[in-house]
Length: 203
Image 1: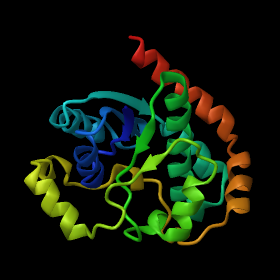
Image 2: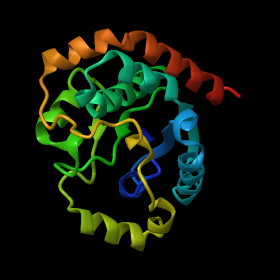
Image 3: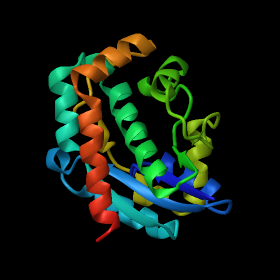
């Protein structure tokens, strides 16, 4: 089996990767916002991918995030950002024969990870999304990160928060998210991001 791990450079996703990697071959996919916040998350992700003994592919989706900010209702930014990652990852899985997506999401930990928003993030995604940390509490995840020697590499500000709203939506509904995706032309954004992946995968 092959899995595509969404590796953020934060604490949770590498731990999720470690919990899955003995059961499947993993490739790490990092969505960077290099044009907005610099290369720190890329450097962290490289080191974390090495710890996981996995290949890493980086997609800079700074321009796509700016489109979301400009064209959609700001409070849904985090839900739409996660949707964009998952829908892009799904297209990559279909094209490159990955069996599933791995995510470090944890129920209720932050605004995009409330139950309602996890439903909004995941609807219409046909590839299985494995969330090994879903019901862990934060201290359990930190303890595992220390045990796996990824914690020190992962600490620091979450780069994906740079464009986030002060008051993100904790609840969302499918119809509203579909409407917001159309405003930002998600199909066009996803096509561009998949093409970036292809260039790196074939280089």
